[in-house]
Image (cartoon, rainbow, N blue to C red; front, side, top):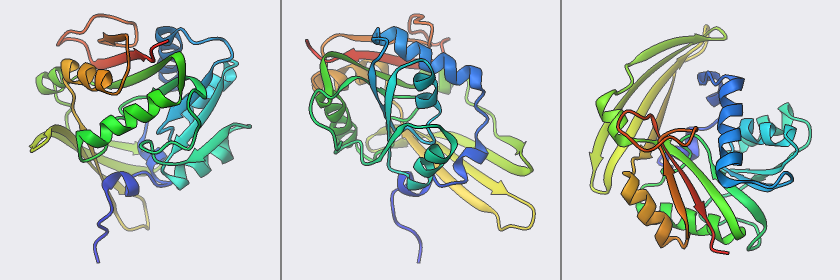
Length: 248
């Protein structure tokens, strides 16, 4: 019988890190951008939403901040616990956060970890929950792909060999009744093992639509940027980065 669970409940198992090639310098750049654009206090309490195996939380912890990582994937949380010294790791759904109101100075959706759900109503619920757990004046950092850039310069299909495993990737933009989504299909081949297939799908938000959703979720000041250096939005810029603040 086919697995009918949503892709985001099945796509992030223990093999997921094998298909990534994140450099430590990029992780530190992304983590530093969130600190800077949210003006985080030195000992900020950070909620790392969809934290995966904890690469950003580790960077914040090493910088003296106090992150809490939340993810739905038990496998990735186990990797985070096994690979890092200390840390708080919580399994949960971003639409129903198990934290009290005002518990955090900052919250983050790092590196395209927002837009997984099938409806924008679910995305809105995730944003409302993120705002609920922020203290007055606290900030949310959100980092997704800029649709115009993807349309103008779509990533080519690719093949990488990572630690002896062959990873094949193909991506496309598709139109759905709820708008555009960016889909990625991957195949993982390792010697002596059956081939595994993975599917990922992320909703694409235009800047105005993302700002409107953040406003509907109750955020006050909303700043949008084209990259981690706070450059202005432009079709030539690679990302859509938001820094949104809970009203004081």
